[in-house]
Image (cartoon, rainbow, N blue to C red):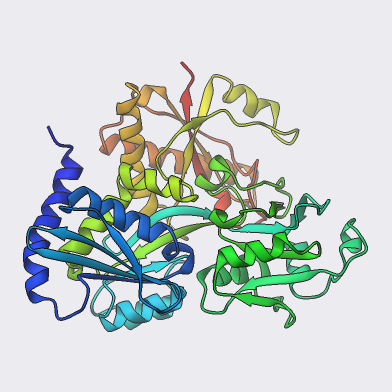
Length: 439
C-alpha cells in the first residue's frame, strides 16, 4: 500500500503534468529563485528527488549559461518537465516571487516585515501556508586548519569583522594579520551574519573580500593562514570550525544536536516561501515532499541538518547543574526544540510541523507520550519565580498541543531561566526541550 504522503505528492504531480504543460506561458513549469545557500545544492537535490519519484525517466541537469543557475528536467506522460533553480541571493528570490516570475522563493533568512507588507493583499508570507522551514543550518565560522584558536564569542567575532581586532596575536594566536572573507550583500547568509553578529553596533570592514558562493569562500579561507570567514554549514569543506558563545552561555560547535535544536548561537532556519492558497499545485507538491521524511533525508545528505528527530545522549560540560543531570539521567534528548512566535505563547510555524514529526517518531519507535519528558525554559526575568512559571506554562502548552495530535500523557516540568543558550533577552532561551526515555 503506498505511503499516504507519497500518494498525495503523486496526485499533485499527475494533475500538473497535464495542466501546467498546456497552460504555462513560461519556459519552465517551476522556477525557484533566491538563496545561494539553498539553491546551490539543497534545492536541486529536493527537486531531483521529487522528479525521480514521479517522473517517467531519469532527471538531467544542465546550466543556463548564467552563473549559479541550473535547469532540472525529466519526462512525463504528457511531455518534458523542467524546473529552473536560480541562486543569486535571498533578496532576489523575494522580488521574483512578488512579481509572479517565481513560484517558490528560497531564503536563508525569515521574510522581512517590509517584504511581507508588499504582498499582503495576495498572501500572508508569515502564515503556515506560505512559510516553510525546509532545513536548519548553522552559520559556520571558518579559519585556516592550522589556526590554534578554537572558540570565539559573538562580541569578539563582531570586533574582528568590523576591523577593531586586526591581528591574531590579540586573540592568543600567532602574530599575523587577520584577513576577512564575507558573503555579498544579496546573500541571506550575509543578512544572518549581519543580524546575529554585527547588529546595529558594528559595520563590516571595507577590506573584507566578498563572495557570492559559500564554497568558494570556504576554499579560500582554508588556503589562507590569516583568514577567517563565514558560510553555511554545508560548505565547511577543508576549513576549521570555531565554537561560538553568546553571553554567559557555553561555547558550542555546530553539530546535529546543537543546530537541529537551534541551541547553537549562529543556527538559522532555511526557508521556502510560497504565495499561500495561490501556490500552483506543482509547487505545493514539491514543498510537501521537502517537508516529509524522505525530503528531510535529502536535507541531511546535502550537508544541512534534517528536521527528522533522532535521539542523542548529550555530553554535559561542567556548567550543567547536578539537578538537571538527575532529571534527565534516564532520558535521551530528541533533536528538536519547540519554540514560540515572538512575544506570544502560540507555537511558531516550524513547531506546528514538529508536533507531527515527534508523533511520527514515536510511532516508528513503537513508543507513546508516556515516554516523553518536556522541559520548558525561560529567558531571565525580574524574579526567579516568574521565570519558573513561564517555563512551566511553555512546557504545558506543548503538552496540550501534543495531546491534540493524539500524543497523550507526556510528562512536563519547567527549569526556569537556568541553562540559557544565548545572552540575556535572546528569544532562543525561551524553549521547550523534548526528552525521551532510554530503553
